[in-house]
Image (cartoon, rainbow, N blue to C red; front, top):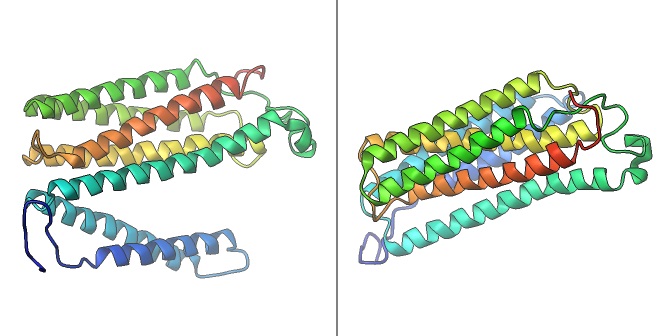
Length: 275
């Protein structure tokens, strides 16, 4: 029965934002396609702008509704289980996303002879005068992310044991470490000895590390929302999936970076001149 509520299920009224989000995602991707063909097609700023505006509105409104449902007690054990399934599938899709960049990087590096015209039969390509020193800023960023994984775990344990002050401190530290990581990566990009699109190494490097940096930015925003909710008195030791989802996402970002550090920075530039 619509509106009926029992121990397991609670049927909520339909929400318009999933539909708006789907249409906005389609508009955004269409705008990106127009942007890539901007020399022959026009109108991309309007289409792309509408898509981005719709996605931002969806994020704010839909997630706000989910938070209100959680605070109203609508997230029963069954609902929480399905939310966990959804987050697991979302992270799995992100794993496949990064797998594509790793696949490209391995293809370029393991079979340079098949791309002799592109990479000169070697990897990194001959056009690369120098690569990043993996044991300089990349190693520092690795330590920063590992520390941030520790602080977000500390915040989680504090929440489980009812220590809200520790929860806030752990979240503050994690957010600051995430911002520090992003700042260092921006500085690294500004002083990189190669550019995006010049060759296969530069393209694979910036696509892999750049998208990871975007995920760090999204994760930082995710944690900021959790911090605001913590100050508002949200989350209990028994029910705090919103925080768990943010922590899962952050640990995923940490693990991806470890692979990026080893594969792209250390192994991928092995034997090349160091910048």
